[in-house]
Image 1 (cartoon, rainbow, N blue to C red):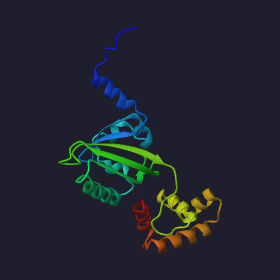
Image 2 (image 1 turned 90 degrees about the vertical axis):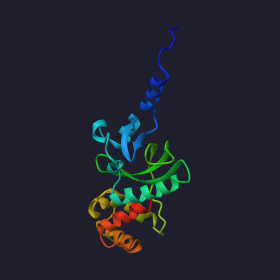
Image 3 (image 1 turned 90 degrees about the horizontal axis):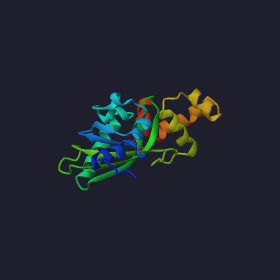
Length: 188
């Protein structure tokens, strides 16, 4: 049996690269490195993300800013932060994700962090009283589908979808479609 000659650093690098858990290393919210599972989850080529702000993976700038502020506030008390949020793949599809972040620089939390993302395949958890059908339709609205497209996917009339969408607008006090999408995203 041959002795193993790999250096510990080489093994750690290999373990990070092939880990089944999607992981990314960020520096001041810029993507410094990520593993193969992270690349598969988001669908980007490596060169498309390296050096980019992690904003590229959020469905909106408002979501990026709100989560960043909440995270930073928490990291001043603890080295780790965890939440559930919408994230966006390369193809534009928005999905639920559980995110866990750990700072390696507690004095400046965003300077160097390690993040783990996990896709969550379930309906929106609303803090307002949404019906199961409204939660289901909300997920399609966030992904940019029209009422007709949602109706086809759910096997219901597009008019029925329009009624549910109008109820969502009212319940979430949304002024327009962009505001509705933003408010649905904030529900995460």
